[in-house]
Amino acid sequence: MIGRPMPAPVRTALRAEMRAARTATDNVARWRHLERAHILSQPWPWPHTANHIAMFALAVRQRDRREAFGQVVRIIVAAPGSALGRYPEGNTGRARVGLTQPMPLPDDLAALLQTTR
Image (cartoon, rainbow, N blue to C red; front, side):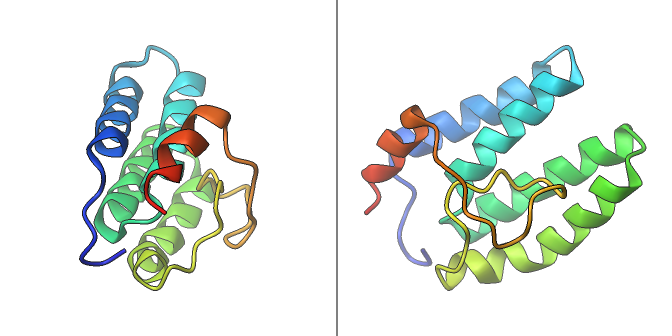
């Protein structure tokens, strides 16, 4: 969505999820918040890429080579995919999920993203 600003409610929710990921005390919670942030960020190239960079950093801290490699690939394709509107809605952004696999949106995030259409 190049040229289209992120609506304030989506931006607020995205920042809250990223903050929660940074401050969570366990890795399961960190990933859950990063996955939710990923879903919110997908329509915008730079927030989407920044989310994958945060996922990469967490994978490196956990010494998870498979996840880290998967995030490198996703960092490369995130901005172009978002800019072209070619991203799988609801995809959590993890390496264990296919790059093009759409997934159901959590109800609260679906409601937020409805405002962008």
